[in-house]
Image (cartoon, rainbow, N blue to C red; front, top):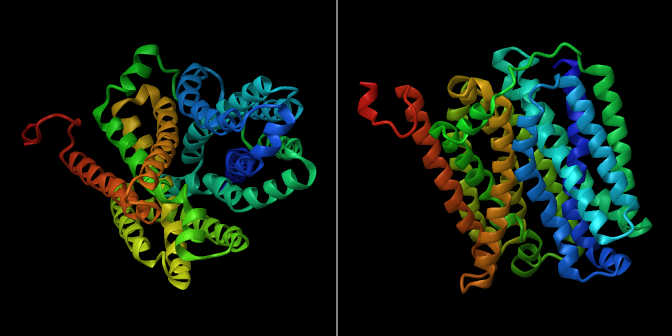
Length: 400
């Protein structure tokens, strides 16, 4: 891999750490609420505002930044990221903290959408999924290390120290991009407003966005409530849960790299296999959750599969955008990043409804499997349309 890919990986780690801060901050909400003299429900908005900022900010800002050269754009995004976390650390009140989180979220969404296209263009065509996976490796490592380290820093030195630490990582990432990323990166011609709107009018791209939201979000039906499942259903102690989450994160990191290699040649074929296995493992988890030993094995498999589909999904949307909406590839990539976040929101919301229903906590895995199975069906449909060479929504007979 070119050194420039590793610069993107470093930046992805820094941004991924602030993303995992959404999980870290959950454990520090009482401290934040007390320090800022707000209620717990208001403090909870700190978590949701970030995801909303990524979801809605990524496609809009990616479209608006289409005329900016790629390296200056990434440096500007990292500067925005550093500023957002610095403001969060210095926030004198609740309102300023929310503004800071939105700023960081904007940098997150645009970076991963633009960074994906840059990573794919830096390597030969048969290694593009691996390049995207390498960039996302920074995010997966952040998931593994960011939660325990960020929680420890926040508990030991206060929640503001966590944001200071993330800002420092942003400075390192800024230096890495400045030193390693070439200045002459290719970029598509700026998308017109019509091209940007037409992305949402492409049935083929909407199909992939739905695959992303359902396939990635399906795991979050159970993952959002994994700690209660491990304690109440499996019987692990609270201290054991944190160690199990580290195991899960390591499996995610391994799955991300493997998923990139699998998807290099044919992302659709890879996604079909990965979604099928992911749905099966979620169903199996419904039965193994009562056994500590079997739960560990199942979670290792689930962690591997939950992120293995990310490189293939991102590569596939870039490929289809170049074919069907060549004037708005970055916008399409950004909308897919938004789809990932919408999937997380959908999975978490549905999981909450399941927990509150007569089905209960133990049913969240198989309900998540239904979402992933839906993504599998959509992937099969999209693959059929690829082979027929037609736009989504056109009669199959049109290809004959």
